[in-house]
View 1 (spheres, rainbow, N blue to C red):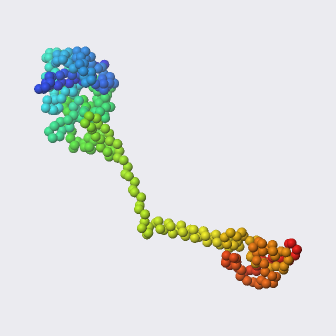
View 2 (tube, one colour):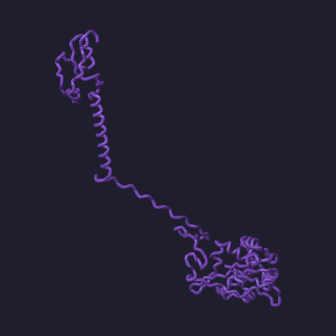
View 3 (cartoon, rainbow, N blue to C red):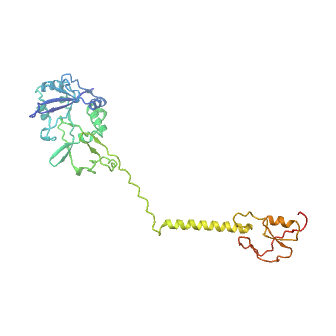
Length: 328
């Protein structure tokens, strides 16, 4: 499988010397392996700081020794003045100080790439899409790498991030007019993702970006205040009183139908409170039951009778209990 290296050159500044670095990031090493390549042998550039995910070469000569062993090179260097479109093979040879007359496999096979195939241009500056969308679209980046390392695996693949510098390929300059949705940077042939939650994402000073949680649901409305006399509460009270009154009336009618006295503390009598007697021992017994005893013949045949509570019981003749006889 082809030997692959992601390399970077940082020119000297007033406070730092020039550097030639080879990336040792875990995600790149994994991507190279999954795309069908072999990570480079960086033994010529010892890793002086294992926490920065790179091999640092001591000088251009050490880097050149590594480049001679590579079949595919991906240049991640920041171009002079931010001019991505103007970065060429000549720019690469100058910055990495390649020697004339030396065979470099990646140049002979025209397999020198950069990650700036798609650029955004605004206010006179350029930005590469690789650092914007390659993270959420890792599958697209892996497909690019596989098409470069094993072309027969994806012969019809249209690269999104990798630009072939050796063949003179130019970057694509995109702007808002090329996108159907500038907010998502969705370009022709792509499908817009669903809308994000209303809460915005935010980045903190420590360099971490966090996904905002969806907005909390609105608080429930407070209960309505008590009515001032014209609302539902007085109506409910009136209905309750009406129900109590109807219940009392129904109970009263039931008692009337049954002929039961409503006087408090009185047990229901066995009949009307009036009786005729003809004397004898039965009269005292009837009186002890709360039955008024009248002499025989003293009661009229048709008369309206009332209970002690004053309830009319109709005009039928009263029940007559014969008080005559011995103990009957």
